[in-house]
Image 1 (cartoon, rainbow, N blue to C red):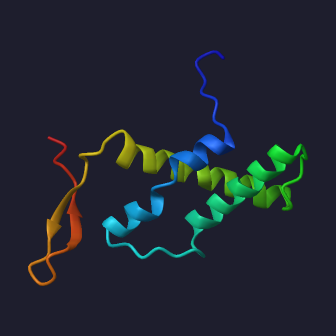
Image 2: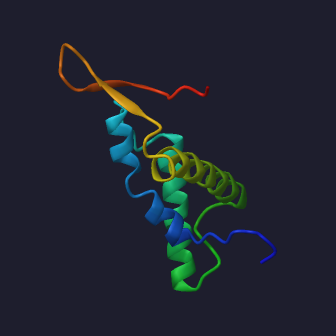
Length: 109
């Protein structure tokens, strides 16, 4: 494949399984109407179309391409932050609630 990676819809979806839990650990509200979740739905629709043998995911070509691009970006960010660099975030406990409320990126020095 000349040094290129091949990604499958199902593989990307599998890798994003912990996305909502990651957001919650960062104290970020999980909203099903946000761009990230729209991108995940586009992938789910594309996977269903692929599995059924159709070439139509029930959306316009521009919606598909936008959703696919957003999903690939989300996949890259999520894997970099969590899967490949699990220690890149250190959580601090809030003195008021004793729960993680912010994170600190490691020093780049």
